[in-house]
Each structure stands twice: as C-alpha cells, then as structure tokens.
Image (tube, rainbow, N blue to C red):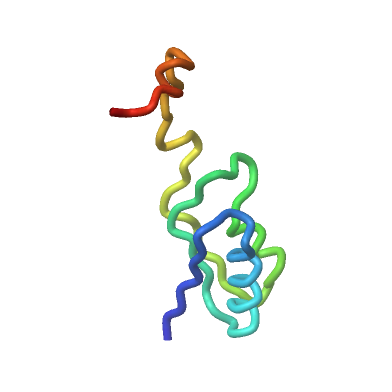
Length: 83
C-alpha cells in the first residue's frame, strides 16, 4: 500500500500528520524535495516525532528561492489599469 499526504498551504499540518501515520503504521517517510527550511528538515522532525518510522533522505534540497519576481520599477506602472 502507498499513501501520499498532500496539502496546498504551509503550516496546515502535513508533516505532523505524516509523522503520526508513518509511526502508527511502522512505515517509511520520504519527502522527495525539501524547500523552505534552511537549517532544519521535515525528515528530521518526523524522525523525532515518530521513532518507529523509517525516514529516507530527501532527493533534492532547495536552499534558495526557485523563482524571484522582480519588483516594479515604478509604483505608477503597477497601479495603472490595463487597457
């Protein structure tokens, strides 16, 4: 059986829920891509919360923002209605 825990926002409880689920089932936990945390990881949190879970390392770890959006050069440009 394979289960995937997914959610659309930060801070909705995906990691904590996945830790509980993996711990209760004695299953493996794997987050393929870790982003947004510089010093910590979700895998480390799951390992601490659910010692019975087998935690696999991330395949990729993003350390810088993947996309940078340039700020408008003029506030007038951003506030003009489009025609």
